[in-house]
Image (cartoon, rainbow, N blue to C red; front, side, top):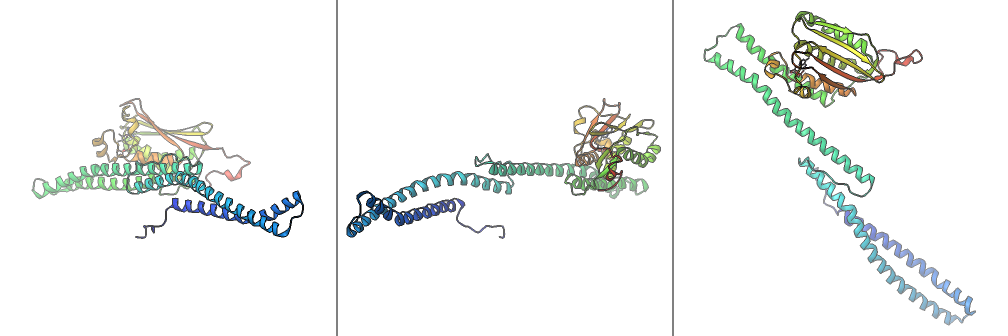
Length: 384
Ligand code: ADP
């Protein structure tokens, strides 16, 4: 009920009424001024031309003049009011029609018709800016709605697989087909962990994509970024027999949140490790140019076929969903990675010569001017 506006006179009648008031005020002013000034001026003019005239004749003339003036002014004012109101009605329609169209479009969007758009009003830049902003908002809502539907569909699909497996075990156990032993518990545990991981990833991707987190921006040296990421990942690489090399020959400064950038590198290193067999190599490197830093994670692993490359950053997209799922992948890691990189004003791309030939993921970030001795404020690692 609080949402409902009180029914009131529309904007059009009010605008027309305002114009009527302007005409009325103008007319009253013209009449008053003319009646106060014209008779005196007329008498002075006559006396100047024919000399002094007798008082009774002067009064006669004055009354006759005042009447003639009043009559013609009244007719003039009435004619002006009619033409003025006609023009006012036209102007009012020109102004009110686009506003009515905008109100209708807003109510359509409120009812969920996100394809509604408003056309250019022709009322000037301010109205056009409102129209443009409205269309942008409607497009944004349509995209959000599409994403929501996609997420629900993908989510249902992703949850169905482990839940079907768990139900299968449950039925086999209750029918006595399967015996209760450590192996069965471990299998069920695996599927449950998969669901948990999926739920965590989904929560994380929605926080990241909706930017519901703070970026603690500061100046970050890419060399330090790579060294830290390598140190954190070394142990798991050793365990899997994959060589991790860090090339820190170049250094430059980017503006970013070191924790989030570490998360980005950790995701890429984790992927590289999961897709590279023992004996393979993963290299982390940086290349600095004038305005950008390019961080690359290159592996000699299984590679990615050209048809999959454009899609791997999409949520839930996996090249080989069965295999990836069995390795714990929910297809969300790269979506999170891309959203984090873009929040830093950067870009991420994947390249691969093809299956079996390894992959390279490259992040491009804008760089900051290098700290110099004359700018002590730009000291490395200092939060701003
Ligand atoms: P997942 O959690 O399944 O790994 P990601 O979003 O991290 O999901 O990756 C999407 C898909 O991209 C993966 O399923 C995998 O097929 C492919 N991919 C990612 N990184 C690599 C890599 N370094 N080498 C080969 N394929 C990769």
